[in-house]
Image 1 (cartoon, rainbow, N blue to C red):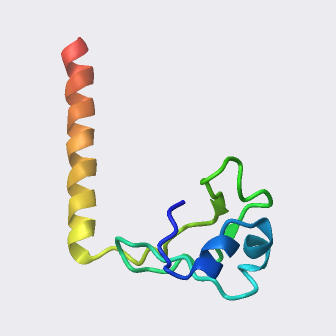
Image 2 (cartoon, rainbow, N blue to C red; image 1 turned 135 degrees about the vertical axis):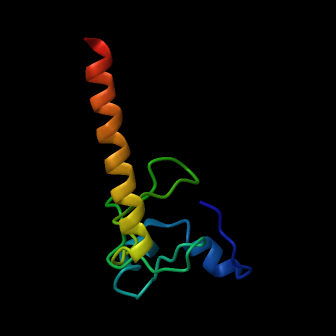
Length: 94
C-alpha cells in the first residue's frame, strides 16, 4: 500500500485497523487508476493488514459492459480459427 496523501493525521489513520473497519460505512470509494471506474461493493478484509504495508481488499471488480459490434466479429473469427486448427490437428494425426 502506498499512501499518497499529504495530511499527516490521515496518513497515520490509514495504518490502523479501525480506519479500515469503518471505511465502507464512511463511503470510501475504490477507483481504478487505469480506467477511472469505481469498484462497487469493494471492502477491506477482516484482517486488512496480513503484513506491514500490505492491505487486503475484497471485491475489487470493475463493471463490464456489453461487447461492441467489432468485439462480436473478433470473437466469431477466433472461434472459427480454433475450430479449423482443431480439425487440422485431428486430420494431421491420421
